[in-house]
Length: 352
Ligand code: PEP
Ligand code: MN
Image 1: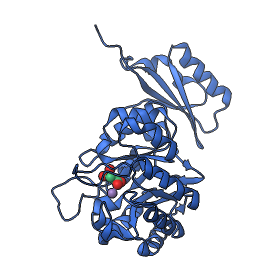
Image 2 (image 1 turned 180 degrees about the vertical axis):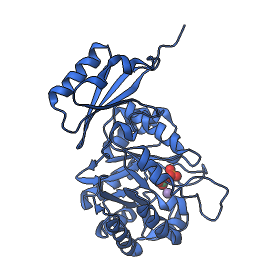
Image 3 (image 1 turned 135 degrees about the horizontal axis):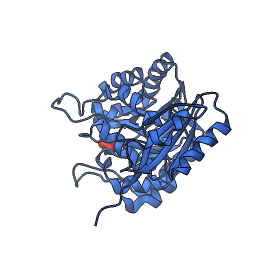
Image 4 (image 1 turned 90 degrees about the vertical axis):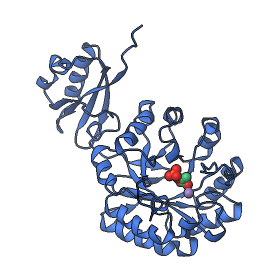
């Protein structure tokens, strides 16, 4: 038996900025006549029409369609990248993400901060208050933790989700928390405002499809050994299921270098900004592994064009159950946040 061809985005048709709704309709009708589906993305500058067809569609199908000749069409081109829906081509305007009234992207900067993991009610609330007072726009905190050692603290699970809810209630900060296992989808989706897919799960395609079926924003972390293209293909899995609300996160990759925990791939930030319309968030904490290095990496990330950063903070890092050496003490967080705001402002961004 021969496998059926898959349906994917094949061509993009860019309309002129002044194209009328009637001209857009005429293009849609022509594509429908040829038996192909469309997906329309209205932009500020131009409307983009995506043409969806079988993966074995003839290369000259675009010429046969003849849309170039219709009024109001600026350009029609095949989608040449392996990733389609996340590609910058598909949506010339960068994506603006709204999370409980906080904005990310299109000049709005996200400062996401909080503990690596929820250890107790007191530790979480104290951290939430401190980062909120310092101007953080979202609260992070792991309830289910992916740990290298099976003997390490694995997270408080559902109890942690309730503690996070209390922190949100008090501070109003949206919650970013990790989904580790498809069996926890319901609980995590119910609590989280942003679902984090951790580095180790970047290519867990079942998990990606699960979050793609929902409409909760997703923070997708780059795998320590994943290329930028693999990160974009992982995001494509989520968008393909219908959820366009994805933020990408550079958190350091594994290289031969041992002086930092991972190597922060600063170059990936402008590359991602060029390749995709999705917001790019940087995690300097896991890349650095040492709190002394976190501010410098964070400033560099903002200067390189990141739409936000996600950082770990704790009231008492020495006694933390997870990632102690890289946690910023909450007592020092306000000064750190001020530095980040300064660089973000220099980059023409405002806090989301
Ligand atoms: C975390 O955010 O605490 C975490 C475990 O990150 P990563 O998946 O990037 O290692
Ligand atoms: Mn951590």
